[in-house]
Image (tube, rainbow, N blue to C red):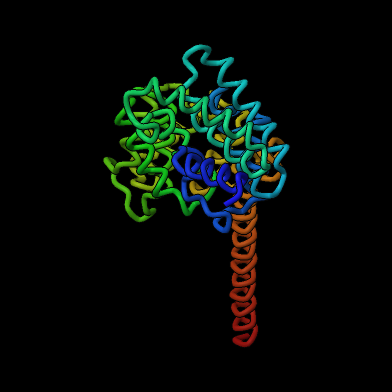
Length: 327
């Protein structure tokens, strides 16, 4: 075995033990890469999820850009992630850097920058020495893992829920992990299964209790309550109106409010809201889909009106024809 092969094998063994996107069993074939990049870049541009959220998004973007062969751009995203984490957390940033440094190590390895790879492995070793538990059990790692699963593919929603549950158990008051857990439950809970005390509804309420300004969770709760029972319409509508008032320019809030009003039959208002959201998120497949459903509803309603009109005319024609025949 050559010296280079020995170095590679040694690094590979260490890399396999890291906690990052490369070791989370994320399969490239499960990912709609172009769509993911559009969504993640939009989230960065809009600054969604505060600085920590943007840092996580850059970290995921680094991984996805690597998958499409843009390795240097991938490193740029990881640098932005590292910078934001350090700016936001200062000396308390070590645990939050574990995933970013892991991705750094892997990408440098694939770029054959073995010295750089080794330097990040050493940084991670120093962080690990300060931990009383394995990195896989650190809430910051679990939280980032959950968000990665949630954002990358619907195929990983169940994994996201499982990981977020562990993160919340470790850090019950963390608003980001609670919000992620709520969203994961919302997306995995069957639409036909809906009671006022369902796991998703309980978690959404808990999330809002912890972070009253979380309008993204508020709209999901409003939708869920409306699906559960029309008797909860007043509460769900209040939730929607408050979310819209609190986040009038957040397309991720507006799109769900638009969906809510479409479900209620307020199609024109839904179109107005969704069109506004589309100005900020022109590539959003969700918004385009909701708008298409709105216009489909309007088309069906128009066809019904025309059919009713034709039916009425036919009845009148039949009446006058019968009258004339009688005469």
